[in-house]
Length: 219
Image 1 (cartoon, rainbow, N blue to C red):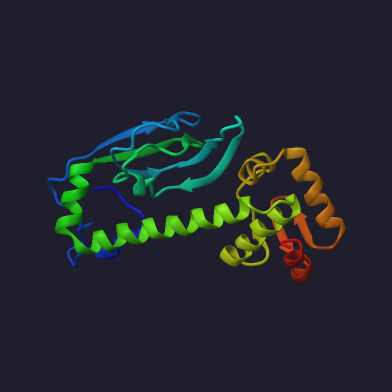
Image 2: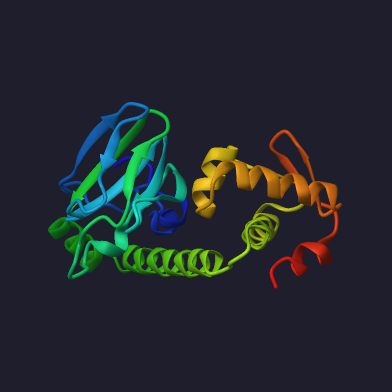
């Protein structure tokens, strides 16, 4: 079995097995950069594991706007919490931002895997719980009315995860989609935050200069 998310590798046995049974049924498929893996509303009837490459997820809102959700880099599962949902449909469109490979494990095989491997079950549940926390934070960001407040919230999260300074993995267009705003408005807000001495930006490297001013923007 191919390499899976490192946090799921805790159940490797002393002989080096990856914890998956030899007779596990699965299939794999390759995608080119720009290909759509799933459209919003597609059936999610299996565990899909991104084993190489990276993808972006986007949601089309009721008013027709495209909202960027996140960038997912291998190895990671895609929408695992929706497999057992009553409405098991992909909530987002998933497209490849570089060549990618995807492994599909049918739902009945996933159930068997969970039943015979308690450690895998624990990792599966933990991952879904972590994704719930991510979506909670995402919702909190989108409830902030001011654009500078949204940018501040995003930057604070990046510092907590990567330290200060940090390199932003998104370009301005992707960040604008992630924040649900127009690119020119985002560029203007970032320029104002630089002029106000809140942040410094060198290419894709961001540094928080004044933490108090940054937190004040959240109000």
